[in-house]
Image: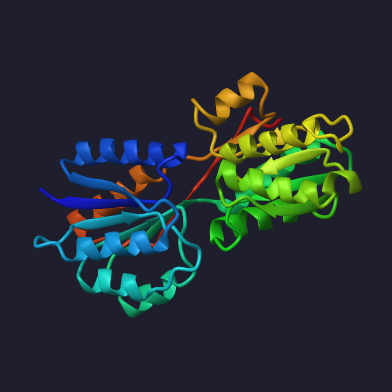
Length: 292
C-alpha cells in the first residue's frame, strides 16, 4: 500500500479541514494510506520539523501533499524531498521557485494545485463594483501579504476595479484574530473618521468575523459616532461557513473555492501508474450567490 503525508497549516480553518476530509476520501478510493494531517499552526519551523520527520521514516513516503505555512519558504528543504524520490504536490500556495526546481530535477514529480487566485480577486471586485457607487472607499482585508496567494488575489481585485474604487488594504493574516487586530488598529488611528468604507472585502470568510468584532467594539466606544457594518464580501464559500453566512445576511457574497486535494491525488495516481509528471493545475472558483 502506498503512503502519502498531508501537511497543512491552520487546524481551525474550515477550508483546510475540508481539504483534509477530501484527501481522506480520495486516498480511500485509491487504496492509499494517508498520514496526518500535520498542522503547522502558522509556524514554518513546525512544518520544517514535520517534513524532516517524514524524511527520516524507515519506509520512504510515496507522496507528500503540502500547504505551506509561510510565504517566504526557501527551496532547500524541498530539494531534499525530491532528492529522496518523494513525489511532491503543493496545495493552494505554490511558491515562485517551483519552476526553477522542476528544471533542476526533471526526473521528479513537483506539482501544484491551486485555485486561480487572481480570478478570485476578480470575482470579489465584481461584487464590490455592483454594491457601491464609482469612487467609493472600500477596505480590503488580505491574507498574509507575504504569501503569493494573497498577493495574487489582491492583484486580481485591483486590476478588475481598475481605479473605479478607492481601496485601502489591511493585512489580516488569514485569521479572525488577525483581521480583528488589523481593523482595530486602523480604527484607532482614525481610519473610520477619515473616510468610512462603503464595503469591506475579505480574503476569506473567517476574517469577516474579526472585522465585525472590531467594528462592534468601536461602535460601543465613547468616541465612535453611530456606525453600521458595511456590506461584507468573503471567500472560501464552504456550505457550513461562508454560504451559511450569506444566507444569514452576515455576508452579501462569498467565493466558493474548490478543494484541491482530490486533484492532488489524481496527479499522484497518474504519476504512480504511468510516470506522468504534472506541473501546476489551476482550478476555477465561482461566486455565491451567482453573479448575473
